[in-house]
Length: 204
Image (cartoon, rainbow, N blue to C red; front, side):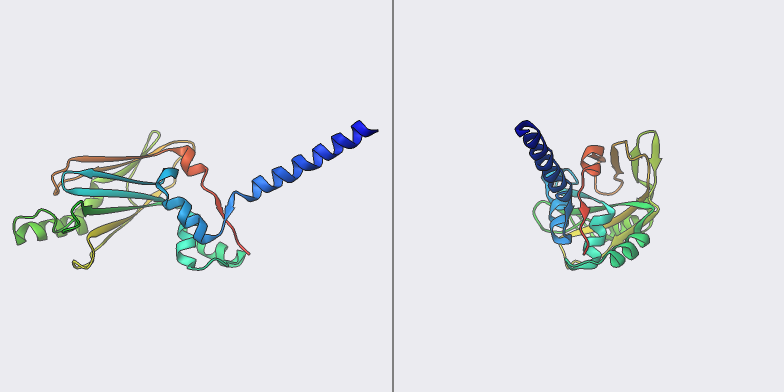
């Protein structure tokens, strides 16, 4: 009888631990933002090449929802509405600055004004042809591309990128074939394990 009671107690304890573990896979928006932006989790990466610093931020949909919501008490209805507007693409922000904090993607290391406008024309009009995502056997080109021109008010520029969803069981390789900064090809690897282990957004 005592053995049976012990077995039942162990089973109950295991269930409690399992439920607790499952619950830990949900984070409030502010916590989820912090998790995704923590470089240790592999979704935020940076590389310094010559005088430039490239930072790539993979943005799971729940992370984008958290940013859009701007609050921790997101209802299930709010979550579903925001998510429906974002589903269908996978999002990456590519930020380019200089390691000295002087200048950005447009002005860093330029020799004259013509070079500035050459870069501006490139990033606004043509750079989307030189940025792509390799996912397994698929080469995905940006379905969403926007270059944030900040008119010199920030030490970096950000390119907002959206790609079709590929096979979730494959790593993502972001490739930038630079044509104007003199850095050549820049690569970022986002491993499938890190993407698929991203916690879910907790709603109320």
